[in-house]
Every structure is written in C-alpha cells, then in structure tokens.
Length: 197
Image (cartoon, rainbow, N blue to C red; front, side):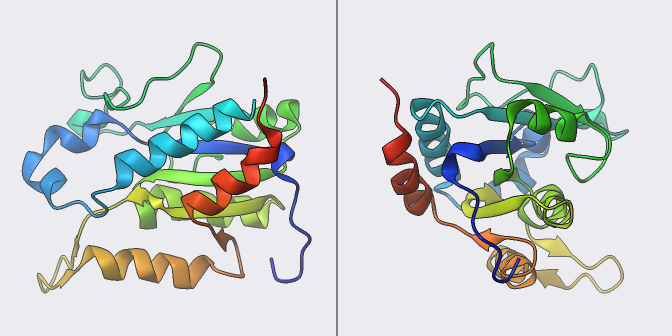
C-alpha cells in the first residue's frame, strides 16, 4: 500500500469473517482463543458501521470438517451478533473470502473500495482475505482487536506458538504491504462524521 491515498470511509464496508459456532464445537480449543475483548470490539464496529449507514457483510466458512459442513447445526453466526435481513451473508469454501464467493461483484455493486476486516481466525481467513484484497487494489483496514485466533501447534514437534505471537506476526506481515493496522476506536472516530439520522 505504501503511499497510496486512503479511500474515504464512505466507500468502506465492514467484513465479518467466520464468526460462527463451528469454532465452539471444540470447547477446549475455544477456551484458549485470543482476545477476550473480541466480542465487545466486533459488536462496537458493527453498530458503528450501521449507524453510519455503511454496509456490513457476513461470511461463513464451510469445509469437510464436521462442524463446518453445510447442514451442521454449528454452521451459524455466534449468538452475540445478529445479522440484519438487508446485510449480505456469503458462504465460502476457501480461506479467503473472494475466491469461492461473489464478494468482488457485491463490493462493486455497493461501490466499495475499502474493507475493514474482522473475524476468526486472525492469521488464516482474515489475513488471507486481507492479502488478496490488497492485491486486488482495495484499501484494507485490518482490525486485529476485532479478530480472534488460537495457539498454533507444530504438527511434527508439538511446539506451540502462543496467540499473541500469531497476531503480532500477522500485523508484521500485513502492515504497509497489504493493509493498514487499524484500531476499533480509530475507525469509530472516522465513522462519526458519516453518522446518519
């Protein structure tokens, strides 16, 4: 991204990736997630985007893993969020939110050139979507405070990478190349002049 001019907030959408019960199917893993403020931070952003009259787009991940399979009772938004009827919901089967959905077409229809990326998991579907969005020319705000992830276990050695290192690594990889690392408060403040009604 470098010296690229930031798109105005009025051309932004909030992209909420994989905030689904599927991750709660393994309670022990869910208990080890990062970011205890995840729910509050994401809820604050959802309300701020709605108050500004800007779109919120929801994405759910599907694959062959039981809790992520289509038809699974776990494949639904977590209870702390509620999608409005006029807010799009996309089902994806790839790590990024573009390749297996009509997200790019939807963004074009909405006139969106800037994405605020939130959701689960920080370094997987959220980061992968941010990288592709950056390459596609979107202006990307990566809101780490409104993402969550889990420790990563090395499959051969059993060594564990702690959640704080996972999130920090994502920020190091994205910053200045694919995305701007934004805080919830920064975006809420930027949205304030766009408040409707």
